Amino acid sequence: MKSIYHVLVVDDDAVTRAKLAGYVEAAGHRVSEAEDGPSMRASLANDPAELILLDINLPGDDGLDLTRELRNGSDIGIILVTGRTDEVDRIVGLEIGADDYVTKPFNPRELLARIKSLLRRMGSGSVVDRPVKRFAGWTFDTRTRKLISPDGIHERLTRAEFEILNAFVEHPNIILTRDRLLNLSTHRSWDPGDRTIDVLVRRLRRKIEPDPKIPEIIVTAHGEGYVFAADIVER
Image 1 (cartoon, rainbow, N blue to C red):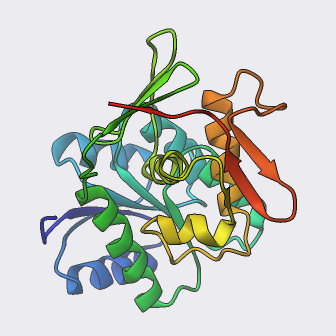
Image 2 (image 1 turned 180 degrees about the horizontal axis):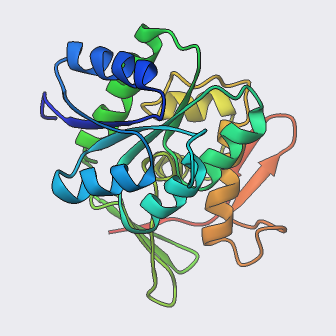
């Protein structure tokens, strides 16, 4: 993992933007700033970033709209920074592809811990003897993070989705609690009591299940967690 990353801070409030930029710069990273969607796009076009701190409440296209836009064609790390305390906003953000979220007013140490955690995930690779795993017609390359459908269609995975799916395929046919799934990922800053794992499981089901409403691959163990019920073939 490299030590210096380019982080783009997008917030329409100049004071908040300056504070965020200052925290990230103090951690040793290079920082750019933008106040809205157009300036964000211009900044990324001129100087691509590895990670973006994105405020939800922006004028024009809000942070959720911009997250959808970014995730459609990019693997950039996205941390939503929001003053909204409604859990629905956080869940929607994760549903559409954000990697993490921080709620204002934020603790600088927590913010930097989440940035460090996401950058670590972005810089780490899977080192396994048999990186390619097949299940239910799907091909999952844990080294390149590619997920290919039985029809040969590439499904894009966010980093969080990749880590949870990887945890499942490494531990098939056993019950994995939400806490265990967090421990098997590198994102331990999430609270196992919130709905983050459920959101990620729901997103994975929409991608790999023939009928997400009647899951056959990632099965719910009521009151306990989830079971990856498909047979795994490694090569």
